[in-house]
Length: 284
Image (tube, rainbow, N blue to C red; front, top):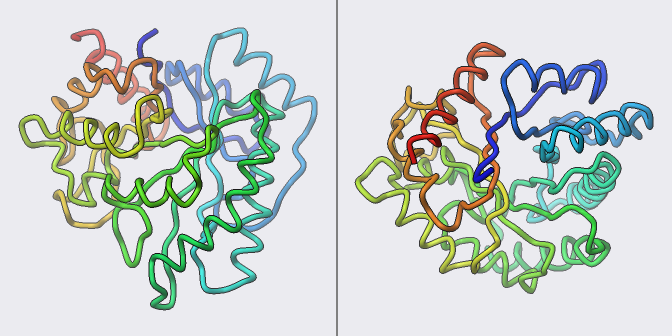
């Protein structure tokens, strides 16, 4: 399948017991989960039976799975405690991803806090994130960097920003990109303009190289391009519109890359967005 389409699913009640039925009801061909409270530092161990059931059912269905790391992680923070907790939290997500057979762990690229220079924050990313990459084996999940909408002193929002981030991590072979369409639109890449999607994807390949794009968060935007606001909208109902998503399916860089929606509307809205993306894929 050129691009499996799926969504982020709730897992309260169990990864397999709660998450997979939700995925099936939305018609998902790919799935993304949290393995910890996304707004906390706890590192729960998980339930081996649920892990194995999730892994087995995803494998049987041919459904690629991904983990989204907690939002609090910031390797560019000026606070040593935050950095230490970020290391522990990301290591936990990577280990849990391995246990459930996930292909990648998505982590936000963070920001330089308290007025620190970007170079200083990126040096800190190198010191603390690089060793986590070295712990990964060939069969372990990829670490997927997700840029932000450009709020505050973000280390990575425009597509070019992935360059210094990759450089800080020596373009490690287990490093990849998760491209969030709402985020890059909010950061100033006008995907709604003629050729805007192609131009942005071309720039990404030019910046990080071929084969680094491993996952796409397919989200429309409630706000205009360049607004630096991270407000997701349903596919085709926002400022990006449907056509750029159709164009996304045609770009060589997106071949075989799964799309995960993180849109409003609950199960019905999610099912409608998955169906809409499948329809756009069919038109290619």
